[in-house]
Each structure stands twice: as structure tokens, then as C-alpha cells.
Length: 233
Ligand code: Z5A
Image (cartoon, protein in one colour):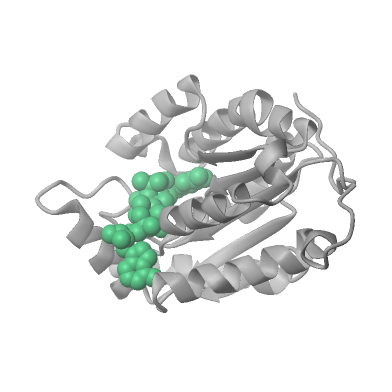
């Protein structure tokens, strides 16, 4: 299993994850942040990797198809958590770990917090077991920063519904409103318990305003020397 550096030095990569409920705007914000990072920051050279979970590798994308089709639902939340973890191990080994060691900026649409929230919601898998599984899958890897895009579930589900049009809701979109309300609480709980790592962003605001809030945080945390005009190591 990949062992990554938890607190990278200036020459090592940065790992940023985006979390939140359905339709929170994660993909939109990752695209906007990647564009900004590629326009003239040191990461234009070091690399900006955009990836997602479940997925990010051929094998993990196959597992994504199985899970989101609902075919694995009969395994129950713990079984589904095991599948997400298997996909995550492959993703870390083949994509995230190597990119961080190259010094790239890795932007990931969902990661381990989604397992804590989704598979733990509504009396799902035991949180202690989920944390144990997370330790096995992640080893020493931890996101340097996690944005929790927060919005009322009704708003996010409506956005997702509009985007989907006539298409069918996937395994998790199809859950009831109480499930989605619990997800929101769980993500906010995670943010409150790990304030160093997590930033809650009001995702009801227009996309450009959300993008500015994210960019300000990224600059403060990772690009201070660069934005202050100092020599970049
Ligand atoms: N899952 C899990 O259970 N356990 C795990 O460990 C992991 C995942 C890793 C993956 O689905 C599913 O797997 C997910 C959790 C579960 N549940 N579901 N469903 P996915 O990747 O297909 O879906 P998602 O992660 O929920 O993302 P999404 O629905 O595609 O939403 P998004 O990426 O957050 O939003 P978006 O695509 O950027 O925007 C959605 C729409 O809203 C789109 O039309 C935008 O133009 C619009 N939008 C975006 N921002 C705004 C703002 N600020 N205002 C207005 N409209 C906006």
C-alpha cells in the first residue's frame, strides 16, 4: 500500500478534497480551482491532477459503475463501504500517491469523508468500523485541506434533478430526504471535529462567489509565498 507524506514540505504535493451532498457544486468548483492553479502558479509546472471517488483508475471506475447502479446495495452499508475502500486503495496507489510524490496539486471530488457520511448515515455502518477501515485504506495519507460545500439537501437535490433531466436517479440520489438531511449533519460534524483540515463553504451562493472563497483559502494555506511575491522554493 502507498504511504504518503502527511505534512508535505514545499516541494511535495498538496491534497485537497471536496465533500458535500448531492448537487453541492463540487465538480464545478474543482474545475474552476484547477483553471486558476494552472494559470501561472508554481503548480502550472508541478501539475494539477483532477480526480474523483469512487473512481480515478480503470478498476475503481468499474467499481463505481457497480456501486452507483445499486447492484451492491444488498451487501448493506458495511459491504458498500468495503467496496468504496477497495476502490480508494487502488486510487491512492496508482494516482493520488504518485501525483503527491511528484509535487502536484491533487483535487479530488469526494474521498474518505463521504464514506463516513454516506455509509454511516441513518443507522448505517458502525462509525468505529468505518474509521478502522479508513485507517487501513489511507495509511498515513490525509488530505491537507477539505472543502465541505454546505447547502440544504432540497436545494442540492433539485439542482441534481434538473441536471439529470429525464434520466434516473442513482443509488444514493434515490434515498429519501431524511437520509440527505443526515448527510448534511454528518459533514458538518466532521468539519467541527477537524477544524484544521476542513473549511465549510456556503454552497448556496453563486458559483463565482464560492470559487473566490475557495481560492482565498487555498492562497492563504498553500500559496502565501507565491502571492506575497517571494521566491518559490
Ligand atoms: N459515495 C459514497 O456513498 N461513499 C463514498 O465513499 C464515496 C461516494 C466516495 C457518487 O456520485 C456517489 O457515491 C455520491 C456519494 C457516494 N452520491 N450520489 N449520488 P456522483 O459522483 O455521481 O455524484 P456527486 O458526488 O453527488 O456529485 P454531483 O451530484 O455530480 O454534484 P456536484 O459535483 O457536487 O455538483 P456539480 O456537478 O458541480 O453541480 C450540480 C448542478 O448544479 C450543475 O447543474 C451545476 O451547474 C449547478 N451548480 C453548481 N454550483 C452551483 C451554484 N453555486 N449555484 C447554482 N447552481 C450550481
